[in-house]
View 1 (cartoon, rainbow, N blue to C red):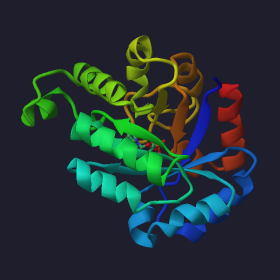
View 2 (cartoon, protein in one colour):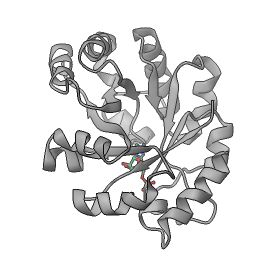
View 3 (cartoon, protein in one colour):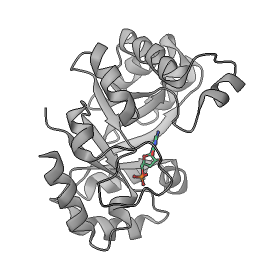
Length: 229
Ligand code: C5P
């Protein structure tokens, strides 16, 4: 399956975001909205970006007891979001309850599991009582997610080869930390180009600043799409 591009709309203002996106309609299908806009404008923001012509990936990273996560997902009933993130750290029962709730309230939505945040290194994992290296911990959580029935995971590009090695093709791998060869690294350190991530098995790549800060966002988007094609 072809790797698809998701634009991370990490902007404060929805009107600025919509003006930015207008010339990109037709150039890409997916936008990622996070807590930044969701908490500012409320759940209706999902409908607004869907009405503007985009598929919406809602990155809320839900993590709580199973009943609370399931109830939160039911509160999104009917919202046009194509993907929604939950933390795999909530455990198998939380993921199963989340999947049941999504099947009922958001049947069009693919739930994605977040494993180890890439801001966590060995020392930070040890600090919260996890003795494994990040990659080993990612594998533990990815297996747990797959067994619980999850159909998608967020992972770093460097985790793609390992995860693709033991997960079935039906599990979508969604990867931020992508930088076209010519773009600035910003605060990302472990990065891959769009073409390399696609070759390593990414189903979707998430790109923010290389498009948001480009002098010509349409040209930057087209260049990434060419790399993926
Ligand atoms: O601007 P940039 O391309 O770095 O944006 C990447 C997007 O992916 C941001 O929304 C960021 O929060 C998100 N992200 C990430 N690394 C992770 C998880 C999410 O960069 N491990």
